[in-house]
Image (cartoon, rainbow, N blue to C red):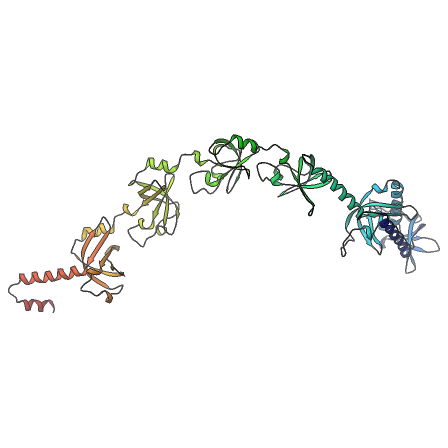
Length: 552
């Protein structure tokens, strides 16, 4: 809403209403009085104001900056009579001073008042508008010129407003917040229109730095330089480069009319170093860079032309267990890296350090062979085994290769960081994987068993498990053996249960494949053979007698 004649007439009516109301409510008049008595205990003075009337004046109104009283009993003093309370005049010395300041303000600015902008606090609200106090001067702001929303709490609020009228006769000054807004909005539009013209470059002053950018004052208009628009390096922390009050050269890049947001850019003023990168560098090139920043996920490197590349943590070394880049690099360190990606659209450059280093697997293959017995360090334990570092690579020690006891797992007997002796079982050059074995370095229970047992020996064991193809039997010293279905006769498989003791003959001992097979059928045959041999050796006895002896 522009400040036109109609609103000005309305403002005049409000000003008159304000003045009339003040006069009616306060009956203000300035008189010269005399201090009759100073009552320090009650922090007041009695002042004669004529007609044998004495008003009460607070001593706080006549104290100097040092706290001492500026007047004493018998002194003449000008006070403002503002009505009566309990038949005593209500008086104020401070109001006289304020009124004088108002008079002085009007006298000083009666010719140029429309150029004056005041900043004050709303101290009172009445039917016509608001009273604004600034530098001990009272200003009146009509409701129509206040530009407040209905329901706004305004008393005590600090505002800026423009002086629109001074009236020496009425000793009043009228201000408008609405006109100031209109003027500022018009000025801001002119500045923004000028800034949005092509190739307009201006200087601005940093007013506030935040985590997401900087607010910069350009000719009285605040614009935001987002942290992406500070440098071609990418997002940067503005507080590390600038401070409040610094002057920067910027260019306007966009303006949101709905939100009234002006976006500025510092890097748009500079030449684009990416043009040089795209023309001079190719993927696969080796370049020298400087470590500029280290984060938990990787390292930023400076190419020296306001461009940063990113070295991901996985590209620092061939070691897969990198936990902190700080363990390998330091800020300010110069390193050679290989360019692995140049993205012209997103202006991102990725580099690799490890690709310039010897591959650990190739080095391992040169130094080790399958069958070698080595000492490694356990790096991690899983449900299926353990990873063991041998030299600069890791091999897998599977659970089935940790012990001859099939119930033992790696995490049952090993700890991370522990050294363990293992045998290199297999080197898979195609997949770059290494298989390790520990149990082959230990004495096999079956090898030990074979030293004390031979084929056809009769053994006793306990049924451990019953499968579709046979029965597993636990023998001494943790040795397992298998009785296949066809070797169970004359026993009936369906009548067998786990935990049952069983007797059988050794049918196979295969130490190379770590297997033992038993046979009940063979046991039955052996026993029958022994019986026949005994019969043949004892010719003096009849067959019937021998059979009777066997079954007694």
